[in-house]
Length: 113
Image (cartoon, rainbow, N blue to C red; front, side, top):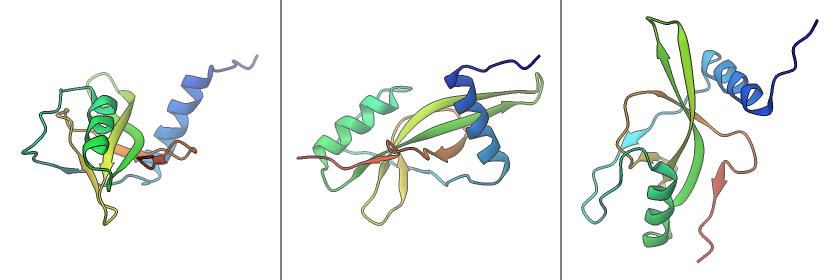
């Protein structure tokens, strides 16, 4: 008897497969002088940053962290700043994890201002 997985679980499995396949991206932490990001509120932080700096992009993806003690993986939606040179800059204080860029149509959004 096959078990049907819900859409969120299917997405997490897809992200984990991409991580295992090596489809990770490097995030560069960004030190900010004119903005104080709130820990763990990456989507809000990046939205606010892009409003202040319209030359940057809001890039969506995922963070994957692995707990070796429990042999479990956690997949969390994450947003970063896409710099003008294509570099992905993480402005939100977080614990270390592997980054995977979204493969869907929401992977990158241009500020409309």
